[in-house]
Structures are given as C-alpha cells and as structure tokens.
Length: 271
Image (cartoon, rainbow, N blue to C red; front, side, top):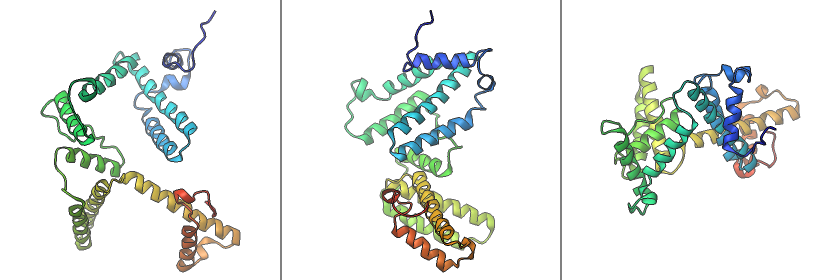
C-alpha cells in the first residue's frame, strides 16, 4: 500500500521533483538544465512582484510556490550532478542568517536598523575575505535601474554617499547640464547614463525604489493610452487621425478619472 503524501510537506515537493526527473518521468523536465531554467527564474520572480503589487494574497501564495519550484528544480539538477542538494541550500542560508544576526542569536547588542546594516556588511567581508569588494554580489544582469540602486546602496553602507538629498539634487542638475552640452552621440549616451544614475541616487535618498517607480509609470502610461484607444473605438475614430491637442485632451480626461492610478484603477475609462 502506497504511503499517503502530505501535499503541504516540503519533502513531498522534493520527491515530486525527483520523480519528474527520473528516466520514466516527464520528458520536458528531464531535458532541463540549470541554464535553460534561467528565464523561468526571472519570470517567476517578476510574477511574485506583480502579485505583491496586486494585493491579492491567493495570487501571492501561488506565485511564491512557482518561484519555490524553481529553487527546488535547480537543486535537483545540482544533486544529480553531485554538486549539492536542497539540504545544502537550506543549510547554507540557515547558517548565514544565524551568523549575520549575532544581535538575535548571540550576545552582540544592536539597537537600530542602520547598525544592523553596517554589521551585516562587516560580517559579509569577514566571510568572503578582506579582498572582496563591497560591490560583489550585485548581479550585473539585473535590470539597469535596480542594479544601479543596489550598487549605490552597497557603497553607501561603507560611507560613500552624499550627506543629504540636496547634494544629490545638485548632481542631477549638473548631469542635466552636461547632457545638454554633449555633442557627439557617444558622449550624449554617456551623459544620459550619468543622469539616469544620478536620478536613481535621488530616488534612493527619497526612499523610492527606482525600478518600481518606473514600472508603475509604465503601467499608468499603458492604462491611460488604453483609455485613448478605447475612447476612439467607441467613437469610431482612428486614433492616428486625432491631432496632438485632441490626444492631450483625452489624456487629461483619463488622468482626471484616475485611470492608471492605484486608487483609481477600478474607476471609469477603458484600459
């Protein structure tokens, strides 16, 4: 008699993954490699973010499960190659959490979140060796805004930062001026990058996640442009026949109705 599995057990999940990878398992799952799964890891991580933004607990629960599957999948492939297994993954992060929280699991006294961050970086350097850069560990294939913000945050942890937001704003003005003055295409691209980097720094000082802020702006743009398209369809008018002034008028109408705004997403307008 086959033993009944607990579907909520982590062991059940790893057992299912192992079965799928067996010779008589799923052909698709058996063909996958650590490299072939990279797009799915990225996709699932973004779907978790989208679920968080939606405020839907059921959706978040589902997407966290999909992301967890990618962790278990990667660990199963590594286990088959006799590199490491899921227990090594869990052991590694458990040891890291305990070591980097001596104020919780040890006798170190720390009172503020800033002290925790400073101590965290010191412990990381201790673990990885003195020759390690504070910028190590920031994935360079992250989205550019998120990568820039992460680099700046790492540098700020060791004191390389503007003392206040005023200096950052002045830097934005300076980079804007340099972009205006740039003539050669290569120079313009360089100065544009500098300006973006300065704006990301400004976002960080203002407590804004630059990647999330731009993503939300894109979502608002899509919703409001969708309002324009929907209105044109209702009126039987091709959108490209409108003048810029007419488009601006519909755009302002969409804004006034809250189209694309988080608090106005359910209000009027075609999206």
